[in-house]
Image (cartoon, rainbow, N blue to C red; front, side, top):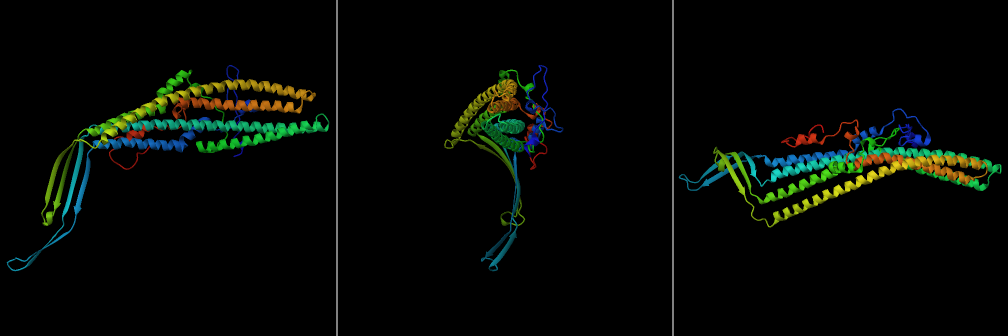
Length: 477
């Protein structure tokens, strides 16, 4: 795809205050005011990323695997049933030398066989099974929060990729336009040199400026191609014409304190850390259960045929056996395991505290960055207006011989730099609004209102948590 294929045509409506709305828009720099039909929107791109992302898909699969841990733990509360069967051939030959009629030989051919069923049920094991189920549920909830975090990352990265394509398209167009202006500037300089109005130095300065402009254009084209590749990687298709995107001001809190409060209460990384604490606490109880007695009962029924080589001697066997296993000493293994689990619980608690601080710092940083980008936009807009006036004045003064070609080139470069800075600041405002929602843990397909069927991890959990048999994974989510 050529860079010009992704250049956008963007409206720049004015709000009630009369100021230009802060869009990443070529309209602000190039005066373009028409939007191509069928252009992709950022919401559409994010919906495609949500449906396409392999990273999000593999995290969901990991969550479904964690759900099966609950079913595995619950199996310890249920009986185990095993069937056994044996069969064989036996040929017995008995020779006797003391018979009444002399030596004799007796042959016996049997087919010894057995078949039986054994049922074993654990009645009490120190609460290990119950606590293991609760631990597996906490681990499943932790994995569910990790799915939420993966969704946040995917959407945030996709929004950044979308805005990078818009920004780099605009910068390429700016540099392309600048090259055309410099080519005209060089043509005029050569013409004036022929008439003796300027010196050869002025022409050389124009040539150098054009060469630099062409180099900048090549750099901008390379940056755009890189952004196109990242867009394809994250969203799953080549970018078509892209529509402008607005910052998510309506979804943002009014104060940084509100953002921090929401993040500390809802952020998936914090919630995942808290579930990890629960799982670690339950792991301690599971290990402590090893110090308690285990009570179980086993019942069996079996039939034996041709017992002990005797033809047609069949025996039925029935049994019910209770078992009590009381641990006394295992070399200190259980005690060491319990102490280890307690230290892992302390680690999980400290990790949860660390996550809170990390999230708080991320929210404050994202809030400050967003405020900075808003202020930068206003400054760069004023700067562009001033530089446009200055460039027009320098050009008029150059016609009268009061300014040199270098003055004109410098003024033009200053204006270009201001426009480049404005495009970057507009891109940053949109990206940082998504980044703030991501830092708060609020960036999701549901919150953004994307037109997709959202993934509900509870569906699979409910399907398998009490599933007692079957090899097929559940249909649906």
